[in-house]
Length: 281
Image 1 (tube, rainbow, N blue to C red):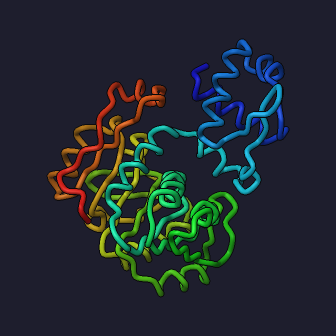
Image 2 (tube, one colour; image 1 turned 30 degrees about the vertical axis):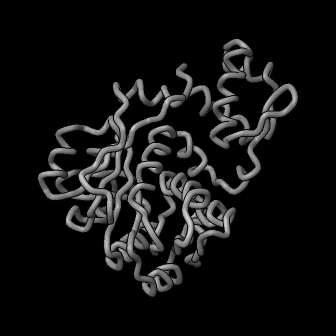
Image 3 (cartoon, rainbow, N blue to C red; image 1 turned 45 degrees about the horizontal axis):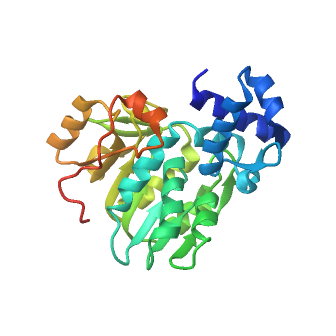
């Protein structure tokens, strides 16, 4: 079992039990307690769990994460964090920004709360509101409506009506699937309507997408490629697709994984520093 798979198993076990000892995890995973401690150290740094005497416990915010969102938080975590860091370089000054309820946007929300000021951030994500609310340096505006548990977001007619009132400088969105010659695809109808509304009312649209989403198609087409101005991804993205995006006039940013996040870098085969032609939006 790979380290990332072990940590995902630990996270799921914590979701059920709340706490586990190192010995229990060692027996559960069939690995040494030293291996378990290394995995726990990584999870603690990423805020996915809290170290306790003799073991580990569920991180304080975990009760807010519904099952679907919780499982997605661990998928390609290092890439998502790298993409969020690269996206920070595209946000300057006192901008008005929309963030959707995707896990990559949640990573970005954490960075905005600690590293930016003077922003107005509009979101339908309950978790993004919680992260952004940890700082008073930015204004957070929540889009209310029916609560969608799998995404921890607010959706439905009331949320769509609320979203239609806002015009933003940057709409920063994620997606379930993406084709470089078509656009984005989603399965959750309730959540993607909000993205469509905000994309139409944004001066620029930035797509945050890890390599696993390329060449994946879902139930419905959401955004056309012509609506997307910038694509921020990781080094594992297919080079042919990236060239296709550049040829179509899209701005492409490749996020590099920092030292200490070697699992994902090894999968990508290389570490590339964030690069882009011009990052002033």
